[in-house]
Each structure stands twice: as structure tokens, then as C-alpha cells.
Amino acid sequence: MLSWRKNKNPSQFFGKIFASTSLLIRTNHVFPYFYKNFYQIMQKKYKVYSYFILLLILCSIETYAQRRSYVKTTAKKGDGIFLLLARYNLERHDCNFTKFCALNNLKRNSALILGKTYTLPLYEYRFNGKSIRSSTGIETWQAAKRVERYNDGLTQLKIKTEDFRRGKQKLWVPYSTFACTPKVEKFIPQNRTFPIFGKKYEQVPLEDKRLAGAVYYIVAGHGGPDPGAMSTYQGKNICEDEYAYDISLRLARNLLKHGAMVYMITRDPNDGIRDEMSLTCDVDEVCWGGKTIPLNQKERLTQRSDAINELYAANEKKGVEYQRMIEIHVDSRSESQRIDLFFYHYPGSQLGKLLSDRLHKTIKDKYAIHRKNGEYYGTVTGRDLHMLREVDPLATFVEVANIQNPNDQKRILLKSNRQALADWLAEGLIKDY
Image (tube, rainbow, N blue to C red; front, side):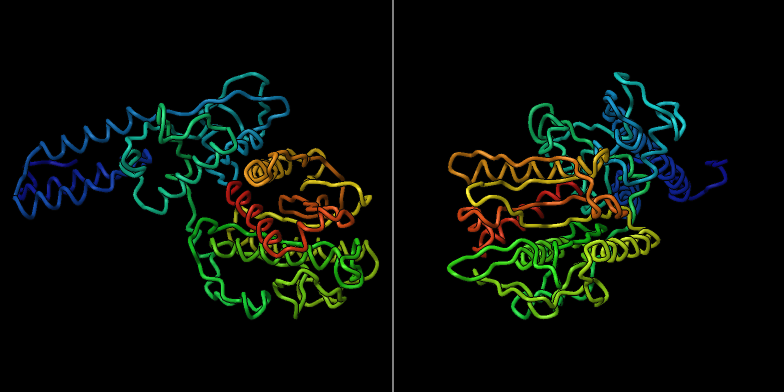
């Protein structure tokens, strides 16, 4: 027990009190980072030894506790605990799962009741109009930026109805921010030279760490002995696999800029990112690990899914909690039919649908800005495809254009359009993360 009489030096006494109080603060997941510095300044510069310092600290802790509450939500049809948490981007940290069960007096395998209100492992604060750190007590700038991205992403998806900077200024902070957020920076690739993009684009500077801890497996459709859909432009053959590959490379480069770890599963040793309209058809693509791509379709797809699953298991063992697969294709339909980007997910995979929905909404928002009439007819549907069914990471399958339609061809022939597609898909994946 702490005793004033046993501590002749008041600074030592209050130091012990502060250490105990600090432990209490962290146990309750509140981090007023300025308290310790304040106490040291008062002690060293002004020799102030007063109960008022301790009183100030305790009152401030009480203030944080009073202005924090839990967000509540109602279970929808088909919801289980995992899916409910996924709707709010809370599923990837196990401590959120454990906290949800504790808050609602549930077991990990408990079913949810349709229409019942549940408490989420998600704190709600009142934003003070100054900073996230001073509003919540979060210690680091990096954690505050993650909270900012989290709130902006949910607002974009209309899970949150209002920007935290306006109106009632409701700021949401996941329980895991305080309890179990891993140090994801260790997963950022340190070597920033990636020869697969070609000499012009091989240097990929790290612009920020928004995707630190995220792993992506990008599959460009077809390749090797299979060119995929084919058409002609100005008398030259154009092949699906070449344009899907170029868009895939551009997407991979975008994700790397933000600190993600990216695996190009279909690979071409010498093409890199190309800026020409007409991309030469070739057959030298290989699968991850330099393996020759089989002609037989089932063998070809199994080779890819096996490579992804092996990498997935290795990364999971390292502690990676967020892994996604994106497969990119160019569709082939009648010459007169125009299509917009559309997405497939595995039937019955609610989380796969959620990923595809988020990408779809991002593309829809971009069309509203960049297409003259603002119309967008892309869809999200379930389809039982090998590359959606047999891979372990959550997966989405994208068709970007109809290679036979002259207007749709412009979407893939122009390098600026290929880059725009990659930019928009990357933006959607950032929101998902």
C-alpha cells in the first residue's frame, strides 16, 4: 500500500501514484499521453508537490470515460457474429470478437437473433473539432490516422450516416485500437525496387502506410498458352490476357505505394507496365515461382489457387490478418453490347459480397463524376468459379470491359484509362481495409 509517511520525498510518492494510475488508464484502454509529461514538468521546473496534480489527472480520466460510449446495432437476416463485425470492419482482430461476446453475454459460437440490438466493440466519442488524439486520448499519430481512415471509409459506405467532422461529430474508435492492434509496419516491403514493372516503373516510393499489414494476391486472367478473349483493333490482334495483366500491374504498383505487400500470381518476365495502345500478344507468362502455365484449364487454375493458398498460410503464420485476392479479366460478348465494370463473388459468401460491394460502390461514384450522364450499370453477383471457391483469402473477380465492343475497347486500349481503372480499384481496396 502506498503511504505518504513512508515516502519522505513527495515526488516519489506522486510518482508511484502516477504509475498506478497509468496502469488503470491502460487497463481501461484510455491513453491521455500528455499526463506523464505534465507531471514531470511540474516536478522538475516548479517543484509543485500537490494533490491537485493527481486530482487533475483523475478528473481528466473521468472526463474521457464520461464522453465515451459503445455503438449499438441490430442483427439482420443471415447475420452471425463474424458477419456482423465485418459490416463494421471489426472482424480482423480477435480481441474485437472476444469483447463483443463479453459485452453481449454470448459464447463464440452463439447465434444472433434477428432484429435484436447488440453492443459493438466500437467506442463512440464526441470529436472536439481539433484532433482525434485529443478527442480520444489515442497516443500515436499513426493510430489516429487509422481511426480517421476507418471513419471516412464507413461514411463512404453509408454504414456511418455522417462525417465525424460535422453535425453531431460522432467519432468511432474500434476497441482493437487500444487493445490489440498489431505493429503492421513490419510487413511493409523495404526494398522499393520491383523489376516486374519494367525499367520505367520499377521504382515504387512509399507514399504512406495506409495499407501496412494488408496482403493482396493479384491474378491477371488467362496467360501463357491461353490468350483469353481476342478481338482486333486497326487490323491488329488484341488479347485479353495482355490488357488484364497491364491493369493488374498498375493496381499492384498502386497498392505498394501505400505499404501493402502484393503478390503478382500471373507473371511476365519481360513485359512490365506498357503505355502503348496495342499490346503485343505473347505466350511467355508464368505462374508464381516461375512455373510454366499448363494448357489444361483445370490444371492451370489449380496451379494458381495452390500458389495463393501456400502464400496465404505462410503469411497467416507470420501474423497477417488481412489478405485479399483480386482477379481481373476482360469479357467477350456481342460487338454491339457495351458493359460497365462488374464483379463476381462466391455464392453464399457474405464477406466476399461485402468486398465486391465496396469496390462496386467506388466505381459507381467515379462513373458519376467522369461519365457525362453519370450512369453506371455494373453489377455484383455470385458465381461458382474455381478462383472464388478454391482460394483461402477473401476473393473478388472483376470484368472490366467487352473486348469486342469498339467503345469498350477504348477503356483498355488507352493507357490513361487502364491507369484510371487501377486507381479506382485501389481506392476501393483502401476503403475496404
